[in-house]
Structures are given as structure tokens and as C-alpha cells.
Image 1 (tube, rainbow, N blue to C red):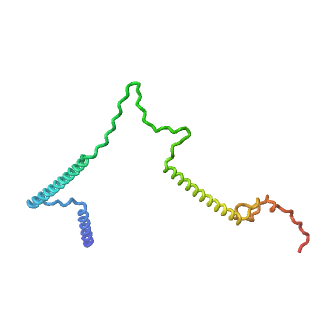
Image 2 (image 1 turned 45 degrees about the vertical axis):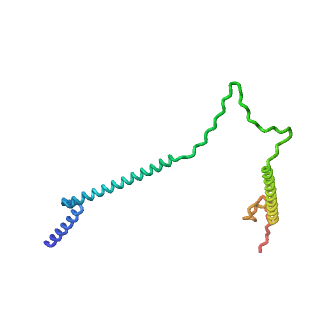
Length: 190
């Protein structure tokens, strides 16, 4: 019995120490020595100096970039062409002179067409003729193909169904499938 009590006491102690290991207060560090305190201060000062140096470099890079942008904006560019001066306003009741137009051709005469337009018209007419010829050839080939297909398939009579899946399917209203008179029953037995 004492052995069981001792074993249970040991098990309880082990369980409580592991439980307290998880839920106990965190370990409190001891106060640093003077040398440790001095090393910590030097480390923080070095970090602050490094941070200050990085910030100064970033500001300097930003300033250089802004100067480059301003230099690009301030560079000399050719001036825009000057707007032409407007003619002076005519006196009241006077009209400005009309611009000079080419002379009108005589009645029934037309000005000569430019050579470039004439060449383009000839080119378009030639292309139109080629296209018409290709269309006619295609139409003739299609017509011949259609006639060959029509010759391969005999014409259907009116009563034939369009779908050939069941060609022998009788329709009672068609003349060839109308009901015939019943055959006479013979009285003889075999």
C-alpha cells in the first residue's frame, strides 16, 4: 500500500511540475552587468547611426531625382510656330476681297482628269473583270457539281418520305398501301 502511495505521489509531483512548466510565470532575467549595459547602449547607438545614414542617402537620392526631373522640364525646346496675324477688319459696309479661283471651263467642257486617277480606274476595271471571271468559273463548277449530284440520286415520287431511315414504312393513305379486300376463307381443312 505504501508502495502505491509513493508511486502515486511521484506521478502527481511529475504531473504538477510539467503543468507548472507550461503555466508558470516567465523566467525573469537578472539585471545586466555594467559591461552588458554598455554593450547594449553601443549596439543601439550603432543601429541609430546606420538608420540615420540610410535615411540621409534616401533623401539625397530623392533630391537628385527631383533635380533630374526639373532639368528635363527646363530644357530648351524649339518654340511653337507663331500664330499668323489676322488681316485687318474692313471698314463698315466694305467686304473683304474674295480669293482667286481658277477660271470656270466653257459650257460642256470638263477639266482634264489627272493621269493617276485614270491609271487607277483602269486598274480597278481590270480587277473587276478578273473577279467576275472567277465568280463565273465558281458558279459553273457549282452548277456542274449540283447536276452530278442530282444525276446520282433519282427523283423521288410524291409519296416517298424524305427521311430514308425507314423507306418501307407504310402510310395507310398512300395508294400502294391501301387496305385490300379480305381474302375469302376456305371451308376446307387440311
